[in-house]
Structures are given as C-alpha cells and as structure tokens.
Image (tube, rainbow, N blue to C red):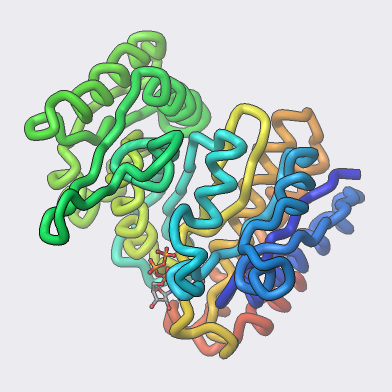
Length: 350
Ligand code: ATP
C-alpha cells in the first residue's frame, strides 16, 4: 500500500484537494490499488493549530514519504510574522525538488485560445532570481537604502545540468524536441551559462531536435504558434511566467497541472495559487489538482515499477478528458458545474 501525504493548504485548496483524492480513490478501486492518505497540518489552519504554516511534525512525516499532494497556500494573506520563505518553498528546498514540470494541453471540449498547445515546461526550481530559495542564509533580495531595492540571481552549472537532463529525458517520451529559453543577449553571464550548459547536455541527446528562444520572443511565439513546441527548458522566473501563459492558452489556469520533483521524491502541486477571490464558493476548477496528482502517481509508479499506480494515473487523466469532452465544465471554462458536480462527473467516468 502506497502512503501519500496530503497537505490541503488554503483558499480553494479546501475544495480541489478533496476532489483530487476522490478521483484518485475511485481510480484506485478500479485498478485494485490501495493508498494510505496521511493528512498533515499545513497552511493557515496549521498557523492556528501549531503556530506555523509548516509545522515540524509535517516535515518529519514528509521525510519518510516519497509522494505527496500539496494544495495551494495563500501566504500573502498570512500574518506578518509568517512572511519570508513561502511554505511551498520551504518544502521544495528541504527535499531538493529541483524540477518543476508543467504541462499545458488543450483538451477537446475546452475552449482554448490555442487549440494546438501540447507542451511541457521544465522549470528549474531552486535558483534564478527567486530570493526565497537561492541563498543558504539571508535573502537574495535586499534594500541598501529605503529607495534602492536589489535582487541577486543565481545560475549554476550543476542545477542547470540536472534540469536539462530531466527536460531531454522527457522529450524522449514525447515529440523529441526541446526549446532552450533564456535571455543571453542581455543577461549574458547568468542565462548565458544556462543556455551553454543546456547546449552541452543536448550533445548527449542526438535523437532530440533542439532550438533556442529569448524569453520575450518565446512569449510571442507561444501566443502565435504554441502547437509547434514540445518540451521547453528554462530557468525559474521565466518558467513561472511562461507556464501561466501556457496554462491560460490551454483554457484556464485552473487546468495548469504541475509536479515538483527530485530524483526520488515527487510533490503534486497545481501551478495556480489559492485563488482567494473565488474560494469557498464552489467555483474552483479542480482539473489542475487532479492532473497534478495523476502526474505524481505516474512518476512515482514508473520510479518504483508500480504498474497499478501508473494505471491509476492513466485512468484519472482519461476520466478528466472524457468529462471535459462531454462539455461538463466549471465557470472559469464557461461551464456551470460546481467543483463538487465536476468532481462527481469525473468519478462517474473513472
Ligand atoms: P500564486 O502567486 O500563489 O500563484 P496568484 O496571485 O498567481 O497566486 P492565483 O491564486 O493563481 O493567483 O489566481 C489567479 C487568478 O486565476 C484568480 O482570478 C483566480 O480566481 C483564478 N484561478 C486560479 N486557480 C483557479 C482554479 N483552479 N479555478 C478557477 N479559477 C482559478
């Protein structure tokens, strides 16, 4: 029996995480797989119960797990004493979850700006300009005077090489194309190093076609011809922005699945946030959370040669696709289904 951590989080997390679990359990029953869900304190409710959004007991439990589901957190809304590294970043850093894999695909039945989009963004997750994770101590952002703010961006050979290998390995399972996205015409040393190391890794993958784009041009190309791209490898900030763009091109941010992973651990985490503007009203689209969970299952199942877990992932994805194809959709996609109604429709199709 696979033990899976559950960190429900804040805002729409309270709606979409139970939805993902319901779909996973239905698929598990159909595939005779068994999961042991371990609910762990996290987010605003953990501030209330434990005085911190990421309690020690949660981290100690995660130390022993290889797979968990992380709901979105609304850390911007936490009391000031909890400002600093975000709860998600604390976890990504502790477990070295260096690869953030974010697919964007237009499903039949969904009105997508780009009908042809079917790509995977492989985003480096540990450095770049993200001040909450690129330092051992202190912050990569600082203010020498009240009127001057500075940020340090970090790019290393080691971190670039490992995300590049994940990207090229993923391309081998897809359409054998990788686009390296950088801004080496301006950030010549930092994103120049990123580009150069990706090129070096590319030399080991002669079966994969490689091209390159500056990040600004890439944004324009995605809007115009997203269907031409397969795997996109890029640094942290660029990947964060491009994946929101890709998610919207595929229909809605509510469709934007993702996993954060190391070589041994995988965390399902939707690419979107806690959406406090719609929380608690049954308006949240659970697709991103369901597909993130399925992605995590597939990755964990392949890593542990657990074919039932891979089959569960496939069943979850197929049920979501069937539901959307039947024009059952939440409000962000122009539909009328509540989160609960959409979830029930997916469970029925599982
Ligand atoms: P974060 O920085 O934590 O990612 P954010 O500020 O980027 O958060 P989100 O919480 O992702 O913002 O929300 C952005 C917009 O997308 C909001 O209008 C929100 O309602 C909408 N949105 C996000 N996720 C969903 C979802 N699952 N279903 C429907 N709408 C969503």
